[in-house]
Length: 303
Image (cartoon, rainbow, N blue to C red; front, side):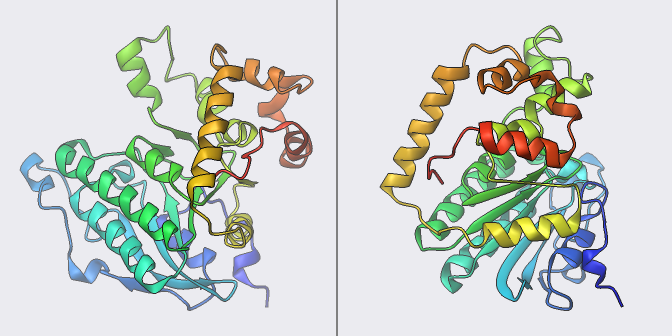
């Protein structure tokens, strides 16, 4: 009988629980603070909003290719995966456990950022999560981020992702500090039209993030492909020291000098010496990776 984890299954379309079920080794997942604990947000009832018994994030332990890991999966279908007090506390606690256990952790990002109804608590949660990520990494723990969900990875979620050891993304994944609607609201539609899906994906999507070195592994929108990407990311060195931080700073400064005045991602791709750069969004994964692995910006041992 064929292993169900090898069957094609869209990461973008799947739920958080479905992603975990097929990402991890069979029967290896143990959930912490599951729905039966009824750990719901204490704030949403004030706004007459529905609550969810896991508060939009699943945390627990499992194995990937026999490698023991702690895992967290955000549910983008619940309030856009937004981070509130309970949601944030569950992720912070898992990261703190990872540091104590010296166990690698995999985070399945699918979030629009801070939950507006819990703004102060959410912002505090983001800072606590980032601190916990860096403390875990400084102790030799790998913190791997997987990005390809419906809600993307925006706002505070993108800041957390930026602190990870390695990031795996699909073409459908989006990564940006500010979401399309936020940019349009603050700067106007002339600056960024959030309804222009082609613009959104070529500016914030997985292909662009891979080409500029913002993520480390590019995979198909397929759970088995994400599993392979996670396995590869878990084999990367677990280092966070002064040299790594300096390399990251140097890389970002160079990127700003090289691309800071570009008005569109297509200009950046052209400056990477990619022929017919406007065709990048239409290229299949094999053709794209052949081009990208020649021309993409190097991460220069940063992370």
